[in-house]
Length: 189
View 1: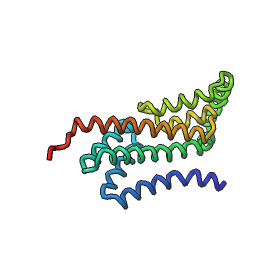
View 2: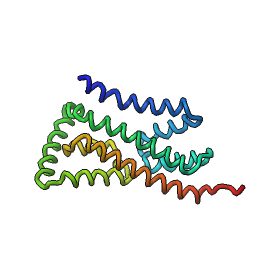
View 3: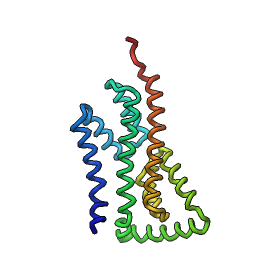
């Protein structure tokens, strides 16, 4: 019971602490916290929030390295907290009357399919690619649900999702930084 409470309370508490610390300790914290909150509102995702965050930080005088590093770290932390919450609390979803029954059937079929064709290692790679490609609905929440339905081991699933989120965020951030140099060139001094 103690673990259940920790799994329910810890991730949201960590996220609130992250956002609060940004607001409290950084001059632009309100803006960055706004980007992180907007990240949860569809259709915003990595592909829109990271370029906006990098452009904003560069516009406010930060160099490209700081803008990229900050954006990648914050988005990856957000995804890690979300993935942790979904993966370790998935069994609560299974308690919902109609939805839980359907998901339990899917879970059984998926486990049998993976075992029959020995797809366990390929499944992790598939989820990595799923999270890496920035389309609507291919985020950490969906990957966590899919991974749990497939019966994947929680820790490996979490690591796969966080690594994919980091890789995707870094790729988008580097491209955004590179392209922002053409869109908003620095004035000559």
